Image (cartoon, rainbow, N blue to C red):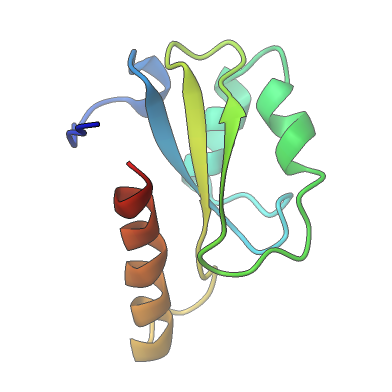
Amino acid sequence: MGYHIEFSDIVKYKGDAIVNSLGVNGNVYGRLCQNIVEADKSNTIKNIIDKKINNNIGDIFITPSGDLKSDNVIHVVTPFRKMDDDNLSMLKKAYKGIIDLA
């Protein structure tokens, strides 16, 4: 299975999946996650990620995309704090997990 990286409005992307960054407790949204949740008028994504609590950094899960144009949303749990060396290392490892999954 191949993949490609594209720079565009993520909520308008039509493809197999988009990637969302999520905090360790699913209901803690960064700006990217807020945009994705707000664009899904069916609340499919919000209802699922609000139940995801006590996640570990690097955890990956896939949800349906609700009203978005992509088929799925790949959520990766990332550090939601200051980007020091330890957190940056964890962030790199989390996103590498997505590439390994693809």
